[in-house]
Length: 115
Image 1 (cartoon, rainbow, N blue to C red):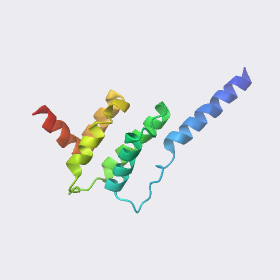
Image 2: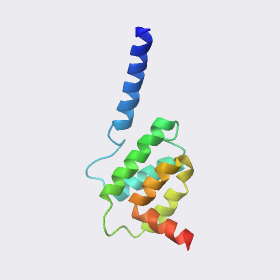
Image 3: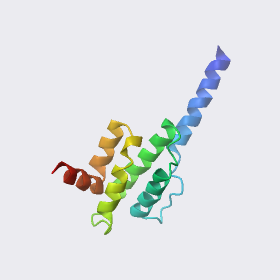
Image 4: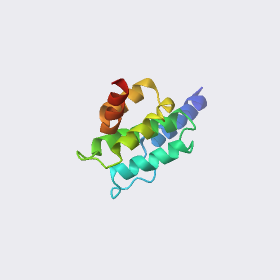
């Protein structure tokens, strides 16, 4: 029984390390807009959606981007929101709600769809 428990603990340790690892390709010198464009490209190509752990990691990265989003967004902010909305089927409903509440481009896109 002890071997199974140790194997299980190792598995969850790896899962935790994957979820809490720094964003792939993220750098303190990249802007939130650049990071969002990179993630959108990966999602649009079908990358980074291989399993629940990876989707959780992407969602975590997007929430971090939300916290750093500038007051005056880029000119293509609305387009970024629309691109991200097209990827929403890859996230759970609660993840979608977190992202909409935290990222202004999504708030604007949702608002326009509701009008």
